Length: 192
Image 1 (tube, rainbow, N blue to C red):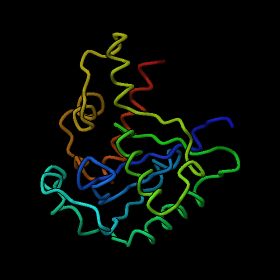
Image 2 (cartoon, rainbow, N blue to C red):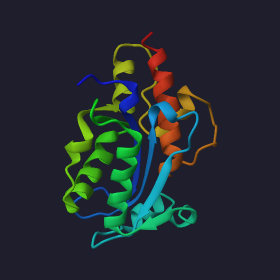
Image 3 (cartoon, rainbow, N blue to C red):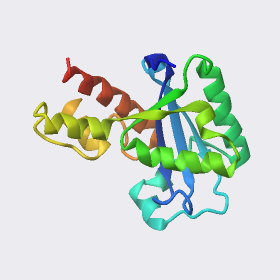
């Protein structure tokens, strides 16, 4: 199967900790790459289901103030919502979906565990490949194309997109998806 921009999904999760085996996904935002300028991300919350939400994660992610407009679903409904989104947005007969994100391995591990908890085959939908803007930043720094290797998404966005722009809130999946889109587009120009 040939990978193309039609099958890229920008993904971000906010979680109740850093261990997908014990900590809960709180929210997940998804946006088809080619629709980034015409559609908003889709974001849902997942009602915690026997997994932890650490107080430090609530504070770090500023969770208390950010969840009012998110639809929270039980895990089975959330799983069905996600797979319906993927099946409606992507032609999986042409190619599997490539995930794009900042430190995307973190999100992939949580999503894989969530799918496993629901007996959903992760690789029915997703490619083994992913695109990580954090890794791209390190590569560009290593080869001398950029002078500062930003590590957080907000830091990278402010350095390479729009200095001190607070258009998107850091640690909200919805805003992080948009920041990742613009960061990825910007970083590609360093390779042209």
